[in-house]
Image (cartoon, rainbow, N blue to C red; front, side, top):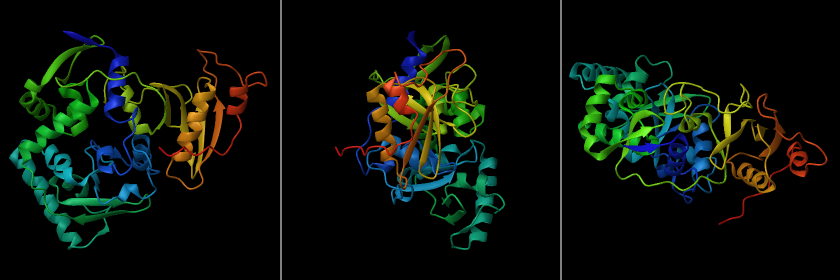
Length: 348
């Protein structure tokens, strides 16, 4: 059996999720291919900026995208053409359970009466989104719901495509992990998984059996700097054992705290945490940066789809791993402690 290390798994996930090599401008749907979680403040937009060159402040509402609730009750930004994959694809296999969802959708559509309305308090709205008949629009202050035509994709095919995407973008993975991510019951997830089993190869993932697609390519070594939003940190394994896209908030850096929940990715490793208020991006480093890495961080902040982005960088010493303290004799560390206007990334 082929062995996959945690480092190899992370390198693969970062690559297929376009967090090593960015997509060209105008690739909004490709950037959201497996969904972008849109928790406040506008995480889906910042997640898109980490994946796509030239992201603008309005790209979250691009015509190629649509929003709805995920199984974990967070709003997600999705490719509009694949709306059926992410809604009908997570319908339970029990026909009676599907009928209950359709009945909830009937109720929600009756309340909407053909109009877009503020929908956060409509009874049954979250569960009804799995029907594929309810789309959302969240502007970070209000949630709006509207009725849309039911997607044309066959439900069984939607289930298989959703499973394939999970394995392609989050492998190595398991049916248990897929059940959590998709919202299917463990029994239903195993049943869907069995239908794509011929497309998979089993691997030893750091001592645990898992699967990847047979077509998965060896990833390049991660390089560069990215500002990852909190939901993207699951790619590095925040579960208890640090392996899967699964429940858990295992800390990836001692710099993270309530006000700095996001991660600074440097050459495939988390080198600090960050948060923002408006356009001010505050970075806490758990290790020092080279001059090139610091300049790359400046460019990342400058390219964020925010009004007047400003960068503040500090070093937060790790209690178990000493770092270079800022001083006049360490030009990079000294520079990193001062707030400054980041450089604009040169156009490519």
